[in-house]
Image (cartoon, rainbow, N blue to C red):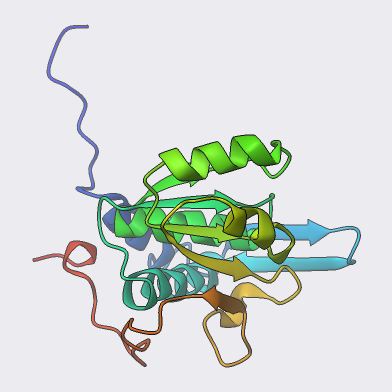
Length: 184
């Protein structure tokens, strides 16, 4: 290939994401639709709504779990709107996501958790016992699949903190923007 390397117009995923969710021409347009036939649930998110959910999830990951750029977060999750939100929040913070298929045998999940060097693992409540059984030394938390993401990290318990160390600082009411999430 000849010529200069292709350069993305944004220096980070966070800047790219913010440029989309805050842009006035797309903020009110549909971004994500989630439908669950079993629960007869359908949720739609505009770009702006999804951006707020991602911001709240990123604040949780950073301020409650202490995750920072370069950390890894393992996930034992199925396809869900909350899974999408968690992934975007992780990418916005500069975290690497280690996805683990919920249908993998328990031994394989355990091996991945123990060797991934994940600082945290997120799973559905149904998989928490499998996660606990691993020797992985990481913070664990679960997500509830029954409640809407639009009010994540609220007193309603959208994100259920199962085993978060009590020494972590409390979640700030309005966390300061992270240095790599804002322009200098």
